[in-house]
Length: 325
Ligand code: PMV
Figure 1 (cartoon, rainbow, N blue to C red):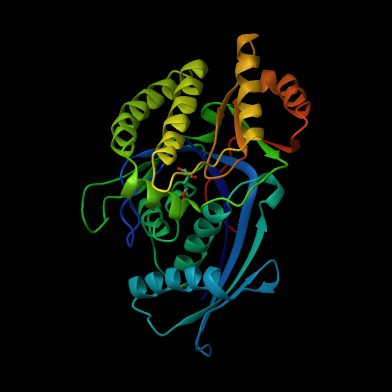
Figure 2 (figure 1 turned 60 degrees about the horizontal axis):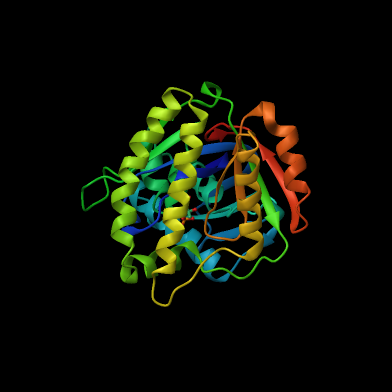
């Protein structure tokens, strides 16, 4: 009853921002992402009859507190599904998502945990079923089941049975790349969980965000199908700006941006004015991800590196979905 799985992070081009059900993690809109290569988590789950509780080790160190609780609560869902409610596991995760890369590792972390634990306990799941259960750990993780481009369909049912991700296009469909730009003045941010909740409950801009995200998603899929970089880039950037606009309307108001975030945004716009196609997107933190094509990698890297507030840049291609080791 042991299995090991590897999962990559993903970056949303159309953001997931807002839940309609906190407990089941059901979103208020569909989202669309690109799974990245080389930034991943590997997790081994070993169910053992002699254990009386779960144990969780991250990079060799035993984890307690809230991160541990999130793992055991997720394993409870897996145990229930397998009718093995008294079987506990030893979970060992290795994170290959350097904190310096500015990605939340929850997407790769929960995707790897879901894949390894369901396999170890003997559940035979389709990718859609795996994505659906992964969603319960962390929403964005349900997209990391697939390589390339994935869409998380919000679904309509109250029990969440129609809320899971599907693949839109495999990784070799289109070589678009992402530079993760890390900044110096990283301030303590509101978690995505809390930020979404506050926005849903208090921001008058939230409804506008939800409504426009459906048009953005339809157009993004068209752009991907036609490999239209300018179209995809423009939509991704505008979608990200609308998501972040909702936080300014929240009560109390907040923003994930710092002045360094805005400097990178300005530089990306400046490059575009000079004819270098680059677009930005930003998640629940101050760092910026820049979307570009391989032929502009060198110049874009150089221009971003020249910004004094930039401390680190990680370049990624499209990556694979879940693999079992
Ligand atoms: O799944 P969570 O709770 O990590 O939320 C992710 C939310 C964003 O990163 C801001 C957007 C997204 O779709 O990934």
